[in-house]
Length: 296
Image 1 (tube, rainbow, N blue to C red):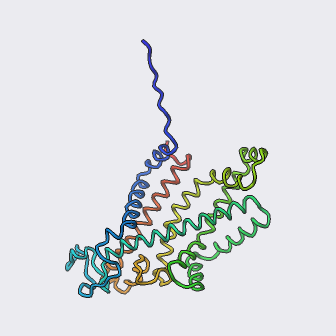
Image 2 (cartoon, one colour):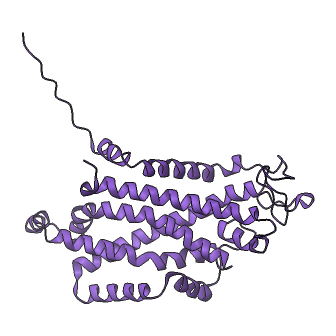
Image 3 (cartoon, one colour):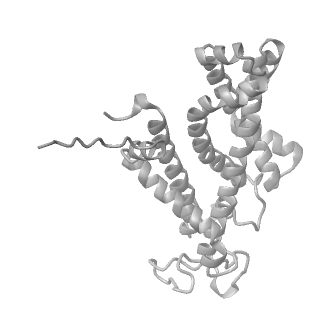
């Protein structure tokens, strides 16, 4: 009787990545929370019970429903101007995620370009790019962001510009280091011998092999940008009132921290949960993309 041997087909790259990613339970929880935050940000128009800018003068400083005096018409209460806290937090998720994603995309595109130029051209090009990045990193991030905002003015667009400049060196130095490591490998030497041009060598040969650490940095960079923008908003240098940005919401309610703590605690908890979830997801991405960190 013939014995059939069943060979199991190896999983594809996406399935392998997911199997490695889900080994980190914290990362899976973080991914679920991030997906939820993205969902409420996209559908804030439908989920929010009220216009975030509308004021209800008869319901100012209304406590949340779990506190005495709460009203189900405003489940999370209202702020000193009578604006619904639930609606403002839902709309605030859209603004905070927009800032984080915008900073990450612009920083990644510019940082990858400058990092590859520094690695491939070397010489004075490398020196100039790296020295400029060192100069940016020599100044504390919040101080530099405040300086930039003081020059160009406080608003949402300028906040994105300032935070992008602050976090640009991370991407430049990461891509440059990864590219320099790849340039010494045999497949790059073989491509050069085969006559591959410098631009194609950069974009199609070297860059794909630098993507793993870049993806992790991009994920973690979103949470850093949200925190930085919230800090600027708290100082009055970020998104300007009445825009429902979480940092500016904290600034508007700082005088009520003892008398009406929920007005400040709710946007603070939104920042904490979102940033923590993104960081947990980033840790999972790092573990899944680096075979040395995978569990046996």
